[in-house]
Length: 495
Image (tube, rainbow, N blue to C red; front, side, top):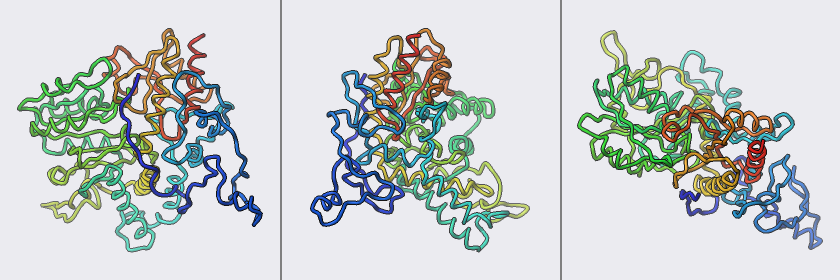
């Protein structure tokens, strides 16, 4: 199986996060640098950087550098197998092993086994830069936030207010947004759903959506049906899990009021043709929201070109804190929408007869917000930006292709979700074995995957399943971890 979401990439932009502008050394790639050459000339001995082992060249067979030369700590190199060589374990010009050093939890061991975190579609791990930024807030910037939200003229809150504004601004290049209409609520997807409902949609409206959406389409759709009498219409998908655009078009009529769609399916990894969906919805004069929780950390997103009315994502899907996210909305849409919560900061003026709200986005941020996690989310976006989302997409695409080949070779294993355009997810079932049993076995050897319905029963049932085993990738995963996964799945399958 070949997937097609491949990008032509430049080198990694900017410096390495957390290194004060220090450029990668030739030693990072197994080569001597200027210090070693200086030592050879006899001028002065070459000294390694603090915490760095002395340079020792290693000869590695061509095509095996990602598994032997840059292997995760705690693993032994596995022999090559299959026809597709392991991709080089680099994001742009940065070795993945160097990236992994930023994620403390990846050094953990589970029952004596190195932790292999392949449950990134559920939650990504956090780098030290995010953890340290949140700690810094609590240590130095929080003490006068008790009672009122950034309205006391003391030094710590004055320090943090620009940080929260920076998080809002950082969300802009993360999705390449031009307008300033970006809210940072406590929970992205639930709050976006509330915001959509607040936009004065009439009772008896007709809501077009798609079956592989989760919260906005299934749970929220059912709530809309109960609360507002909405009729839900679901766009079908084909046998590979890709939405059928022609059928989507047929769902529109003069009662259609709103469309909700996922950018990437959390259960299958399918990349939805959201540009087409947005254009079609607008052709019918209908607003559309895109759930970008599963796309934001994997593929480039340009909301200006996309032209969606809403775009939302969660912080814990992009290496940030839980319970925080981003709701992007067009200026006119946010101005039309009514506040759905009440509290301080959203009020411009209030009397017993009248309440006048702040302009968007402040009118949707009632009370004291999740300030610490907002600055943590800003640090997470900084981290991803420093690596380059195009570089991340390129590496993860190669890793996905490698994983597809390795898992497809296992007897009795069926990959679920085989659309040509997909990213990051390797869902499968194993003949003769319960998915939960596969997940438990993998957990016992340190491999974290998700087994179950992934809150996406409609799309799984469309393909004939109630659940799957779902390994899911991030840029800190390695080809050797894919080898380790495939080896243990094959071992379990042979029982």
